[in-house]
Image 1: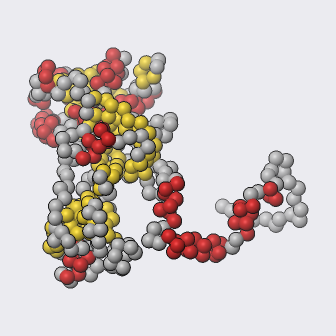
Image 2: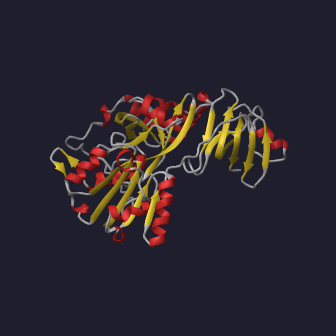
Image 3: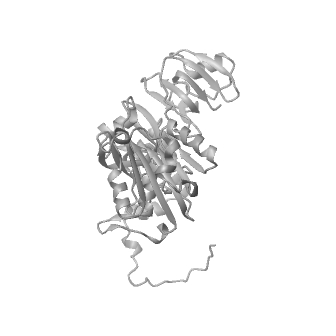
Length: 397
């Protein structure tokens, strides 16, 4: 609540308070400018920089500032195995934090195309305010390969706020983690939060006292196992019980024999993250025994850009368009009423969200993709007057 009072006729300056007459001249002049003049000046600035807006120029100077689109700057890249790396990112001022086990969607430009992917956060909230993901390069994986092999500190990436329900209940309990390959990434975030590792060894803070954890971790070989040294250190400290299974030593994990590895399996809540085959086998195994199972699965869906395709609108209308016709023109030709403006890609009056698929910018060939589950659920904005479908796509209009 704000209150007002009559100002005294004269007020002696407080000891140590700045002398108003000594404030910078520019600031004193700005304080004398009426708000309406300031708004007009801002509008003039907008007109002067059109088609860009003043915020575009601010982004060049301070891309992580409050109020800007959420971005992050890569500050460190540490290789964990031959094909996996941890990427430490300084998020923008509007980052809202996360709970260990959650993931974020990250967008990065590769060869002129912005790609979005979802990655688990591999650390709890850090004192330095930074966040980290661990990426495993996969064959034909454009983003994962770029982050592991090509990205460098200083690179700006686009971010979305953390999301996901694959987290540990704060009330504690008896848990079994079953992880395979990079499926360890959300789990290591939870374990690091439960049992911080310092120069003095593994800590056991009060919040970890109510958690009893067994980890069954599967990898092709020990050298291919991400975070295996962290897991072994936690096991040696008695914080967890680790059951490491390597394909080259133990063969493929037989889920039906899981209770041999974890005799008190029936007393534990299972959280599993890994490839679909393992999760499907676990689901059948646990359902048959009436056991509780929570899973997190990485998506493998990818959008392959082509030339032309179908454009599906929210009301079910489907329009065929070739790779040289803007979506706006193709839709109007079929009687679909569309928002439009300059039809030159300048005014942004035609922008609509694409919820899935790919489009190609006819001005420069850049491909924009939208992958359900990875990109923004509300859609990726595309300029329909200068974008043609690059394969099937869906437009929320």
